[in-house]
Image (cartoon, rainbow, N blue to C red; front, side, top):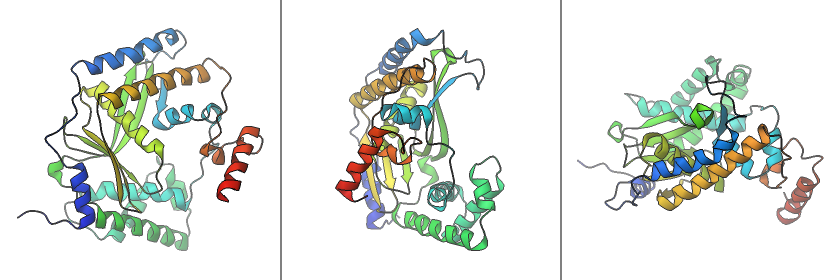
Amino acid sequence: MSDVYNPAQQRVIDLLGRTDERPHIPDGLADELRAEIEEALKPFHPVLPDGKSYETRFTLSKRGLSDVHSCEKYFVDGIGPFEWSTANAKGTIVHKAVEVSINLRHPMPPADLVEEAVSRLANDTSKGISDFLTTLDEFGRAELIGICTATFTRFTENFPPIKRTWIPQVESPIALSLAGGRVRISGKLDIALGKPPDKVILDIKTGGRDHSHTEDLRLYALIDLLSIGHAPRKVASYYIEDSVIDQEDINEASLRSTTRRLRDGLVRAIELKIGKVEPVLRPGNKCRWCLHNNDCQAGLDFMAELAERDGW
């Protein structure tokens, strides 16, 4: 008996399901692209950490790569100490609920699963969210669980149940080592389905859409190509609140453009962090959270334009 999906679930199946047509990835492309990045890093070998241990590497994440390509001042100084809130805790809790739900032998009601996710995160002192969850009062905890349950329930209603035969990998760390171990590009996959060459990499989003989401996924596809020799056939972002999926086939052109983005961003990140060059200001949406948003004239002008245009 074939599976019966509701229309929202069937759209996901139709968009992500395997097809006979697949973009051609030339043999030797992985070696060529890796060599391109390694060549750009050669001048920095003398100033990079030695890479002999986990701590002595130059590490760049998808967020760091995005930041260095936006405002370099923001990349250098960041947003200051991170503070947990109900809004940003929701994503972590829903992701944990999704992760656990995939591997459960017996289904649990969404509220119970979210409750369990909150308890486990609260008891895991290695997680930054732990202190926030343990200091919530009864009302705050109930409110948070209610918000997360609504979002997670929407996911279970509109995303097809993930079968073990799809070979799911959940919250799976990935990394790329470069420059003889001196440089590490790191990330974490929300969900990967299938095995190469039919693999699909999927990010689950509890917030709004942003162009950087596609760039992040392309980076993951490139890391897969360079680290295991196979790129996924497709990457996708699934937005829970509006049940929309943005997907993209991975092909030679996207892998080459992502290589250039990684190469240029990595070189500039090293120059900024180690070479101590002067960062370039590029005002944009990150101005809202920047440490310098009260004294950076470029950022203040950008925020004023936003307020005039959008009433923000």
